[in-house]
Length: 318
Image 1: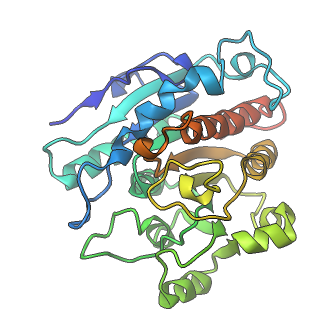
Image 2: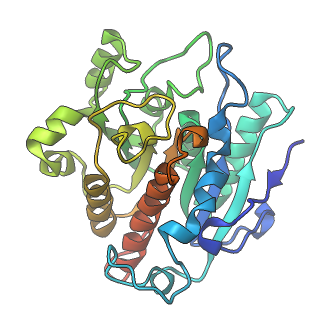
């Protein structure tokens, strides 16, 4: 059986704990490198390298040592975070069948979530979201999903594959634990067929194109997200504008800026519990200019993480 592998560098120097029996944490970072593969895609693809590529930039996007003031948090991240914070390494897939890998990933995430950790998942492609949702379903934790992406990701299956990167939001719509969703930054032709858009609307998903966001600002988006439910946030890096996140397989002009994405996460983290967040679909080979995509991804993680725990005196995080 394949095992959890240690990162070359921990996420902002969190202690590395690879043994699930020792996963007792308030904040946990974990890499989910693989999703169910499509026959027409190269495997493994470059996105499997993204978890360590994000971690490698830790010194550029954050100091988590409790000594450096963070103007975006108006606080010191190291002082704000609880002491029980760990990097769980990467759940990588080698020769094992995908079903076995999927069960292993779901089980690992279930341990963390059931233990009360706020979980930050480093993908991998967008299929990495599906085992997180499966873990939430197993423990019966209701969540509302906030999804940032250029694409709808509502395919029921592609070539018989149901747990690939085109399907995480459709998968979410089939689960009892998911109380609804808001999808932000949709643009271009993407991967959606008219029937999938109709299905998402019939389900009740709140769809905000990038153009609608530009016209109306964040207010209508925030108003669509209920305040009485815990949130799970999933961010596809191509939901951001290529000027912010060029290192993706499918760049689409006109995406969210860094500032408005960070503001979205800040408001959500301050006002209600966030059980976790994933950032997916980064392709390091396209991120050669200053690794700005990985830096942006890490910065968004620490923004939500820091504001969540800075608010803990007013309400519980989970």
